[in-house]
Image (cartoon, rainbow, N blue to C red):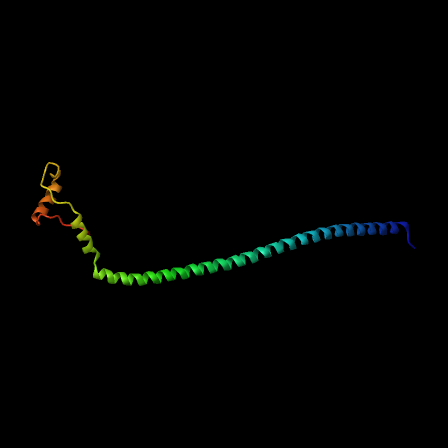
Length: 141
């Protein structure tokens, strides 16, 4: 037969099961809410990834276009340098520069107090100029 203690023990176990079920339902609800938040976050991150992917493609295309333009500029410069070499061969820049220097130099004035050399180096330089024909040499290089 069933005694009263066994009924109370059964009742306590049933109460524990009911309490545990309530805890599990609460936990289940919390987990579903967190799952919903995580799914929203995943969707948001997937959208960001798609945005980054499309931006990445635009960036790559921009870089490729810039490189292509640089190649065109480089080719144009290489073509121009070939033409400029021909021009330089016909009209050397050094001769042109020397001619401009000679035409723009002032006339030699006689020595006055203002034109007297101030140091021994200046005197030596003036003596060298006079001994080499009286005209100063242009030292370009």
